[in-house]
Image (cartoon, rainbow, N blue to C red; front, side, top):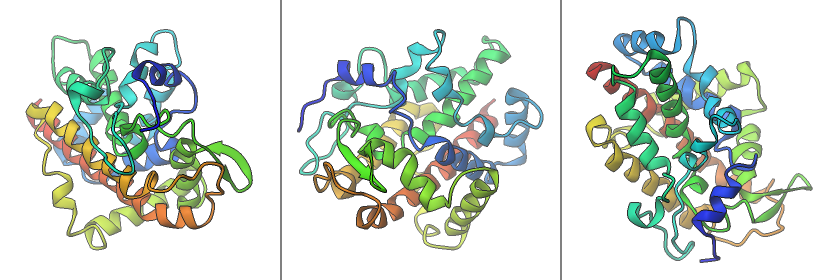
Length: 282
């Protein structure tokens, strides 16, 4: 493993380089999730977010919030530092990899409990739901389940001739190229494409396995399994070959595209199921 410590990654998490999927990816996860909500869950979401507020519209709130004085505590919640050795060995171990300040697995477990706890104010429960909407997207981005060179932030690459880093290309550039750009019309179109794949296309036979662990009473175990699932892609593709200083807008993007689409679809479908289960238990 090319070294990366939890302490260093926590520092990087306060910078703008760590935003899983970017705005387009997160909004797409929220849009897909909304498609699969039960009527009970739609009422539940409205009761917390407010009438007419969509999950897509708040899906990136947690990224904005963590840069504020009030929200800086949440920076470590967006990832888990998998101290593994890609591409030869990929793994996530909660005791080894979840830092003292928390991680995405512990955060999902915490906010899953809080969102339905009526001892908290509606404002606090709303915030808990907004965190969940974001983190269930974050956890499907492979480099948010990886410590290698700060989750790829310290791997310099080129995108269309411009200097960037591997993490940023997975967050934003490749997603936006795949979707066709950004903006609401693009997000709607991209979401519809992935929903069709879930319903009757390439993911129809896989989708049941995506929600094999969606028991809100075992949230930590489920979140860990999701992180482990995404982390495997680092060995399978993301970090399989050293792409340092290479142009990624070409063959690498072509190979990455199926993983990007599957992970975003998976995040949305799983989020919809998670919220359905929360609503049923509320």
